[in-house]
Length: 196
Length: 176
Image 1 (tube, rainbow over the protein chains, first blue to last red):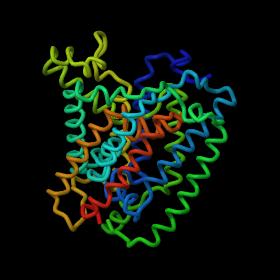
Image 2 (image 1 turned 135 degrees about the vertical axis):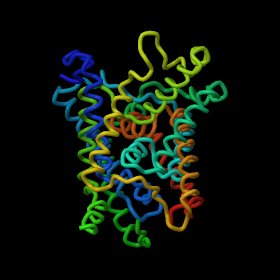
Image 3 (image 1 turned 90 degrees about the vertical axis):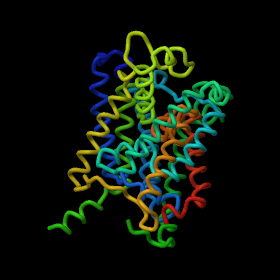
């Protein structure tokens, strides 16, 4: 029963080997989906290419459904799976700052690494900027500490917070994703084509 | 022959195929390790390791760097660092197979290369800064967070995309 490494079914020494293998698959599929191109990524904000949105939501839905099935079948103990902690202030403020970075830089960190791997100079500069941003935040941490720790709600899920069934939530989330895919396919036909 | 190669370099996977495979990779990551994927964490580890090397006392005293330093492990001995090493290799392989390996700056022909590079640096800076405030980026907080239905993951996901849509108008000349 999973998760295999935390349960001790696979020895911990394999952790880094698995990290490299999973990373390779992750990088391969992201690059092949077009994530090494900033102009393709940004298309979703201007309506001329929704590839990234489709890949992102399909992946989220696939993994969420998979985890619920794995749990239902007894293949994974979800109580041992790390739930990204909820710091409401940081999640909102950090997300807004990242959004500005997304639309000016044309990459997010993972996609910029794909760009670096195939020789995109803009991705290399982006990655240097990324590390500079992390460095400045770290040096100025005392100023932002309140923001960083604000409104902590614990390792809570959205369904616990609203008192919903996770199964129903994922079902409706999937329907919403399909609706978004349909709407974006209409938008892309109406927006002037951009060649890149 | 040349046109053949150029054509191939613009062909990508069907986005739903790419999404399902990416989702299965993420599911496998949870199944093996109990945690999700990430990206900005590896950049953070690199910064922490560099500061620790150049100014060890400063790093130990800092309230932020010290969170990620321990006596028995080097800051680069971290799952996400190994994952990103794999990512670079995997993306390189995919680029090589599709004829996309080339040193170049991709930009809107209406703007100069210099302008593109300046904004790429600024964008990276904002994303790096924001990813620390939110404890993760599009991979670690939004994608992996939302997959386990984390409330914070959903909030960060909506904040990133909402903000990017909100600011898109002001930066449209960079892209269209």
